[in-house]
Length: 415
Image (tube, rainbow, N blue to C red; front, side):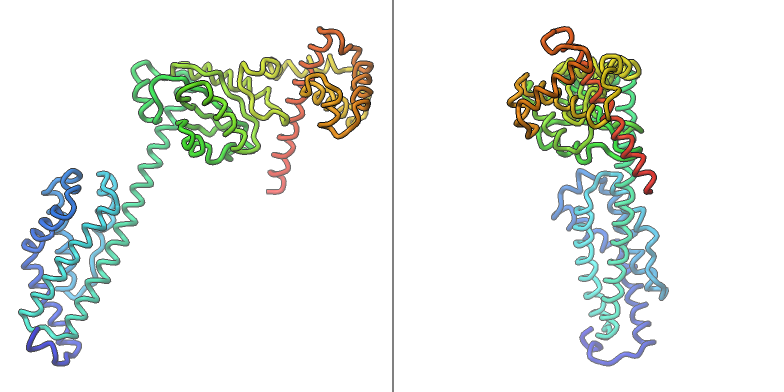
C-alpha cells in the first residue's frame, strides 16, 4: 500500500482491488484460521472446555471464507451460516459473551491480515477504506444474525425446560411419579430430594392469569425453592422449606405480600410422592380462605378447614344454622355477621371489637343480642356458639367466592 495509497482510484479500479484482496485473503484462509485459533485459546481458555478444537477450527474457517468469498465475486455477504452458528452455540451451552469475545479476537486477526495484504499489493487508500467498510458491515450483520439465532435457541430451551418442569409438577400433583423418578424430578424442579415441602394453591383471578405474579422469585430471595403450575382455576406450587418451622411463617408472609388472591397451604410433608395428597389438603385450606384471612394453612385453622372441606354441602349447613337471618335486609344480615366476626377476632371482647369497628361497645353487644334472637342460639352456650362459628366461617367463604365470581364476570363483560 506504500506506493499506491496516495493515488486516487476510480470505482472500477477500487472494485478490482477489492476482488484481488478478497482472493488473496481466501488463499490465506488456513493461516488466518490457525492464528485466530491460537489467539482465542490463549486469551479465552474457557473455549477448550466448551467446544472441540476441530469444530471451532471448522467454524472459524467457514467464517473467513464466508466473509471474503462474496467480496471476491462482488456480491453481498452470505449470512446464511450466522443463525445456525448462534443456535449451535446456545445448544452447546456457550455463553453469548464468550461468543462475542471470540468474534472480537477474530476481527483483529482478520484486520491485521487485510492491512498486511493490502500493503503488499500496493492497494489504494480508497479501496482499503472500502474493504474496511465492507468488513465492518459484514461483521455487524453477521453478529446480529448470530445473536438472533442464539436468542431463538435459548428461548426454545427455556420453553422446553419450563414445559418439562410443568409436566413433572403435573405428575407430582396427580400422584403419577414413579419411585425411580423422584430424584430426577427433584433435580429438574431444582428442589431437594427430601422435605419438608408444602403445596400452595392460589385462586387465579381469571383463566390464564397468575394468582401470585413473581412469587417464585420472591420465595427464592427467602431461600425457599419452588416449582409452579398454572391451571384453569388455581396456581399451584410445590415449595421446599429449608431449616426450622419458622420458614413456614416466612412463606405465609410472602404469600400475603404476593397479591390479593386467596391461598391455601398444605401441612408440611417429607416425601415428594405425597404431593397429590398435600394438594387435596391445600385445596381444602383454600376453600376455607376468605377476605378477612386470605392465606390459610391446613391444620393451623381447623374451623376454616372444616368449613371448606365439603363446598357442595357446607353452605347448606350454614343456611340451616343462619336461617333466622333470612328475613333481614342483606345489609343488616351482613352487619350482624361482621360484628360477630369482629367479636371472635377480639377474643370475645365487646370493647376491642368496638374499637376495631369504630363503634361503641354497647353497639356491639346490641348486635350480638340481635344475632342470638334471630338465630335462636345463645352465645353463652358452647354448642350454640360452635355452630355459629362454623356457619360464620362457611358464610365468609361463600361471600368471598361470590365476590370473586362477580369480579371475573365484570372483567369478561368489559373485555
